[in-house]
Image 1 (cartoon, rainbow, N blue to C red):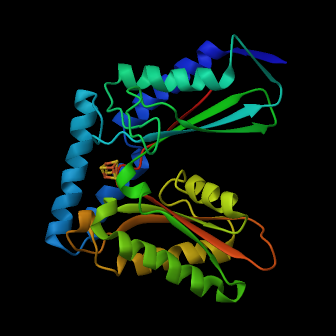
Image 2: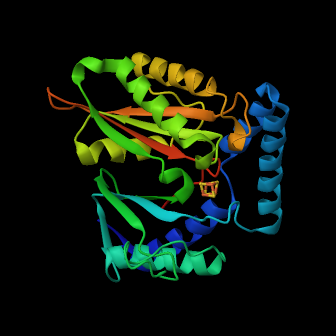
Length: 280
Ligand code: SF4
């Protein structure tokens, strides 16, 4: 049994919060650079170049890529041969978020009560997903989720007979409804199958995939490619200024489901497609 102190977990979460908010993943920046080459609209190209410049400024000055540093979503995969010592596990994760958002000078974007709307002033509580996996390591992923894109995410139970075409109609409708308000170019996570809770969980997990990383099943990879093509034909374009780059990537995750159901969820991620991971 390997022992890991909760202080190490706290400090890892804190470091990842700063890294995620300040540094876009390389695959995202490369996605912008490729899109500059293919974007048909001059305004769209200008926006993409501004996003590349924005990333450079954030890196050089060690500041947040976007003022909206999000509701913090933390995924922790705990090896079943790990013993966590030193204190309460969930409290350590929340303390890491508190520490990271203070030390990284990130905006505090969380209200403690959804109706009373009082800012918690430390970006907690984070949404924490914990899974038990084989092994003796702990993998931590921090995903700061911006409000402007999350607000356009949606789910629906389709009739099973609506099939892949129904899924495409629903996803496209969600993207058209969002227009420029979700801060495109987008990465779109689509969940298909599971239950009411599972389908939204896998849609969010899908946005953790790098641009260019297709689903291993050929029919799902084809659905991803077809969705990306039709979304980029909407003409919404970078930041809604028009153009051929409404999305950089579509990632679909699936799960088994009930014989009467075809649940679909769309989790929309903006151009601030931030995440950072570490293994303890
Ligand atoms: S939706 Fe994304 S890009 Fe837009 S303000 Fe929020 S974090 Fe920033």
